Image 1: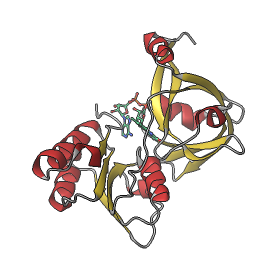
Image 2: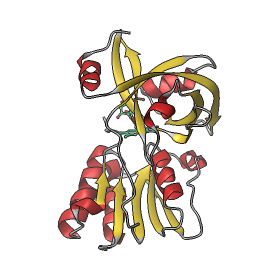
Image 3: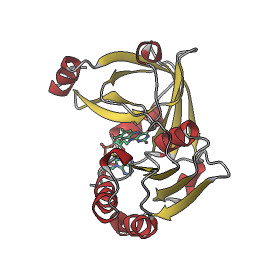
Length: 236
Ligand SMILES: Cc1cc2nc3c(=O)[nH]c(=O)nc-3n(C[C@H](O)[C@H](O)[C@H](O)COP(=O)(O)OP(=O)(O)OC[C@H]3O[C@@H](n4cnc5c(N)ncnc54)[C@H](O)[C@@H]3O)c2cc1C
């Protein structure tokens, strides 16, 4: 597959390329496809951190296009990782649904960097959805002792099948996707408190992410270093 300019720029920026191989595939309630992959040396070379994501390359009409996916339970000892694909009408989602054991896919590691603040925050406020649940789960694992309040938007009831890794001191609210995401924005903005010792993490549809981030920064006065936000997908 011929790389486009994005691939060349990423390489120039120090991006590292790997070939992943599908070891097993599992459908979760028809809404997710969970693939176990051999990492082609990725974890040994790059390590892993909470919310770590990679760029997968898909052949779309003969050209390479990248899509971001989050590492689930990366295990450098075995060189294995899992990817969880939310299913919708898209190339990456279709590739995952049809993937067979032995299939390969190219991946680039470039741009992913996150560590929980040190000292640890006293509370985590996390906003996500099906696409960012793997990242939310990695944060709940990494900050297992930290109380957390989590809002997860869902477009279909069976999206709740990919369970949040919540413990007793983690409070999870599922919010239906309504009014193009405005319902999530209103729900979160009405409930989100300000707190100087908290960390805020927002990763949902791009417009919703922007609105929630603006509210946290401008209305609540949340400091830049206290907030991590990234649009995970873009509504058509
Ligand atoms: C850092 C990062 C990490 C990510 N990790 C994951 C992950 O682990 N698992 C995961 O499932 N996604 C993840 N995503 C989101 C994923 O990259 C996007 O959803 C991507 O657009 C999917 O590509 P596609 O080719 O399937 O669809 P596209 O070709 O991009 O879009 C096709 C159509 O589907 C719609 N669409 C795209 N994504 C979604 C969605 N999530 N929900 C509803 N409709 C959608 C679009 O609006 C469009 O109409 C991550 C995104 C980022 C930025």
